[in-house]
Length: 430
Ligand code: HEM
Ligand SMILES: *[C@@H]1O[C@H](CO)[C@@H](O)[C@H](O)[C@H]1NC(C)=O
Ligand SMILES: *[C@@H]1O[C@H](CO)[C@@H](O)[C@H](O)[C@H]1NC(C)=O
Image (cartoon, rainbow, N blue to C red):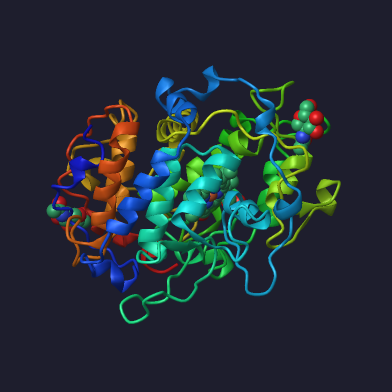
């Protein structure tokens, strides 16, 4: 297994001006607590979950049903929107967990609580959950207290060493991206990347009609093309980064169809109607003209059955590839150069020192390897992948997740030339 480990030995050339918190410079932050927490979470994963992760990579092959997929939304898990001082952010999956008390209702969560709720309530694979949560803690959370925020900033546990963690809201271009499912582009909305833009939601909504509406993966693949095109055509500062754009924002489109669908006995493969789609996005109203969005009101519907199978990292990659294969343009990385309709895609070969190029990106596990290299490359110039906190955290992840991933050999990317992005105003100014 040389998945992320491949990148350990790399001298990644980075000329990024993306503002990462200064504690990322501190490679001496002790990660033994994180290491123990990961071990302890993994030790408690039901054998059945692990078996499903390993069995095969295709979600489509599996459509079982069990009554245990019904999610409790009563009592301590009753819906309540955030009160003053509680935070919500750009991710509806995270917001519903907080609104139902599966996450701390404050919106600031611990490593263990977040991994456990994501896997048990939504059926995110344990590998995906650990990777996403750990990355959150490393870039916008508190790596000592092992907490992070699904929305705005919060006080640090060690203010002298660690500045105030920014939360997902502050992760534009590192985690949060332009061309989202419903949230707005940073430049077009003055930095508000967490609110649903009703016009964008309506475009998704209108892709299906009436009582038979079903927001399937194919519908979301179409929406992904539309959201990408919209940003090209309307945002002079559109920037589509390797990790936050191509990987995270594209995966988020696929997540809508898979995770929000009602996986019942009748339709174990999942069915996402208009009522449930609105509920997960905090939208009310009966007709398209009367739809209303209220911040922080994402809600799990009553009588909702979660997906039957854990969504592994292999599933993440498989579904991103399906989206790119359907619409190759959304597989580009780059941005507009200051005017609308000026999209320039960077040459992947130039970006990766020739290791991954547009011909082989879709082959084997290259997009997966590329995603991890991209995640690691989100580092300021002074830092190399091996001497920063983020580098150390990703190395730790590599070791911990190795046994749960198929043996994927990644080509060594010796260089990740981020100076290619300097031509895009959206890379440096949001
Ligand atoms: C630790 C786990 C997770 C993290 C850290 C996370 C983080 C994020 C981030 C940073 C975005 C913004 C992407 C963008 O700007 O386009 C996002 C969007 C999104 N996420 Fe998550 N997410 C997680 C799990 C989930 C899960 C389990 C689901 C589904 C149940 C989900 C569904 C979505 C959707 C649908 C969007 C698009 C939001 C929109 O544009 O309206 N996420 N998430
Ligand atoms: C899910 O499907 C089952 C079976 O059709 C149905 O009883 C239940 O109400 C549905 N739940 C939602 C939230 O639509
Ligand atoms: C990185 O890209 C820039 C801009 O194209 C180029 O000038 C520079 O030579 C590249 N660096 C390396 C090491 O290839």
